[in-house]
Image (tube, rainbow, N blue to C red; front, side, top):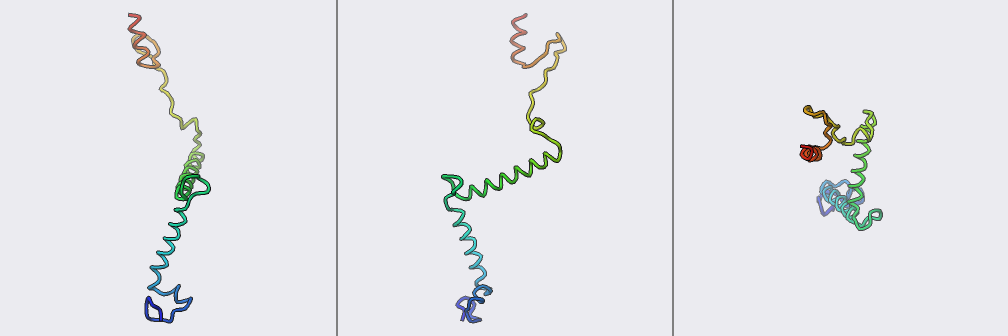
Length: 110
């Protein structure tokens, strides 16, 4: 008799189909995956395999974003933050590149 369900004879097939054993199998699988992920990484020295998984997820997301940018026709130069373009001051027609720089220059001239 099966010690878990006390209904059938315990044989190899019954061990895998026994409903009482189902939770133990799930737990065994989770525990095994955790043990593998908790091992030292061969790729990322000094890190665990969890980091390899996270790195893979991150890289995959980066590839998805790159593909979306490509579909939309965006290039790296389009994505960079640009400095504000110089504007003209209405009073004296001097181009303002940086507020602090021009304020000091204006004070010296007066």
